[in-house]
Image 1: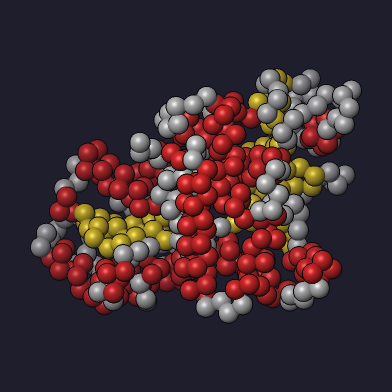
Image 2: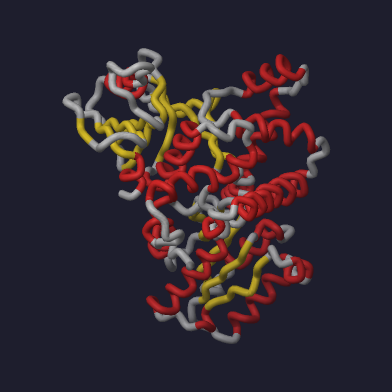
Length: 409
């Protein structure tokens, strides 16, 4: 069953026929090509676009197509296609554009050609590289769609697994939301194999090959470390100190920073900076890191049984799609808040926990989860998400919400 990615299609529809270049980025196998196919169907069925107006034969994941294409031949080929149907708009779709050498020159030439009425859509697996290149070559003339794995709601709504909510959530926490993985939830070996392929493809093609990494063992040790630290507050200095103290390995600040940049560029991890609410500024010197997919977290981490980190990672990925901005936050009294989210200039605070225990229960975490939010002296919305609660609003206005219900909102 194919899941229609309405959230992303709505974004593309909003930008339809705007001159700016549209770039869809995300992890390999996340469904960027499928999204483009769905959008092309939308253009044909809902907007009356003729098949002759769509140029979509360039998938640079295909080695044969890539080997026959240069940036100059791409320009000439598209000009020839358009010349056969002059005076009508054409829609150009190119997959994994970063694989083509000097692709920027080709897209810039096509973009600026006044004889071509082109609406350009690109996909790529190297988010920062593409954004940097587009920012350099097309200042203010590109729009970015960051794709994430299928949400829990998308899986339940489309009845992909024909299973109850709780068992699906348990599987989703460990196996993630990559399209080809979901139908294999009941076959653990298939899941592991599929996730391993995605992970290795991303590391080998988007990092080792692209950046010509020499010390692969060193790089992979940083990968393992970062996934083991998901949801924790860390700095590059912390990482260097931990490696030296535990393994007597000395990594420079520059090396670690470079490796983290490459991991995030390949969409394997996502950084979460702190937000200084008083100064209204972002603080990146110390931040958290999360996996771009829960399944990749499973195959890259040592701590398989830690459900709380997984829940926090799950909520983080969900928040990225619900809010304009997402940060972590520390109150003026130095109390940790998992997430501070901003949308339409409105702020919402979130705490995430597996089980929320009442104040009088043994080992209660009420003060840490609810008390930390209560210490924030403003009127913005404050929410605690937990798996074992019924949704309610406390007398101080803090909302306690069942996690599964929240995911299905």
